[in-house]
Image (tube, rainbow, N blue to C red):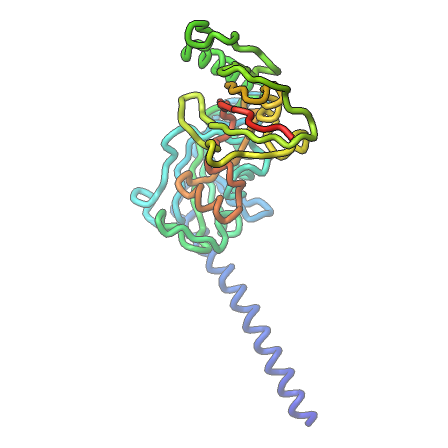
Amino acid sequence: MKNFLSLVIVLLLLLFTSCKDDEVDVVAEEEARIEAHFDTLDVDVSRAESGLYAYPITQGGVPKAGFVLSISYKIWVLGADSATTSIRSLDTVVVKKNANAIYPIGIDEALSYMKEGEKWGFVLPSYLAFGNHSFPHVLIPAEATMAIEIELLEVRSETDVLDAEVKAIAAYIEDNQLRDTVNYPLNQPEMLTNGMVYKRLKAGTGATPQSGQFVSVTYEGRFLDGTVFDRAPNADVFEFYMGTGSVIPGFEIGVERIQLQEKALIIMPSYLGYRESAVVIPHNITSEVADLEIIPSYASKVPPYTPLVFEIEVIGIN
């Protein structure tokens, strides 16, 4: 019996050692693959404690104060032909650094290396990239090691961003002739708070909602270019309690101003909306990442630092 127990223990130890060896082999394989990649490049490579590999492509400029970054990028699976499999950003991408608003998470860390005007390359081990998630339609398998080149085009403070949004909202008012008292006779657009604008479209007949009341509304949400990103028509009324933080701040500020049966236009800068939202790189897997609940669902609809226009009608107050 004693000999049998000894045999079992030996077998378990061998099995455990084998599993550990397998794990070590996987890590060693990935590290060897990464080292082989850098052997083909004439660059100075640094490796962070987290495992992120970084190397400069071009260097320059002193950054402005602030944390809102405008970038362009090219990303591909390490080992693949970057000329045929890489994905480039079609437009400038705006992100907020160190706000847990960038996926994969390794890119947030990567941006800490950069100054305005610089271009860097990075290699993200799989655990800093997409882990065990795969995205076949863009040829990203599970446990993929990712290579990415990033150019940091501009660094701005959030104050600079807000100033630009307020100017864009003013231009929207002029472009859409909201001061035209013939087409919009009820009132001139009113400034509510820090760049937010209210414009009555249809007169109401009752009181305005108060904190703690249950409000029923219909609405349509648009960007300044007219693109609709969300709506709750009459057949699908949206209901919420005022003062509970269940809606974005600008929406509640606007609804507080609208009488029962009134319809109004509310225009808000992003700091009263979804602020930095969330950015997914590459951009064309954003919906899938939202479905996986890695980012909030609204981030698949609303980009970072985007002013919003809501057409709202209050149809019930209880």
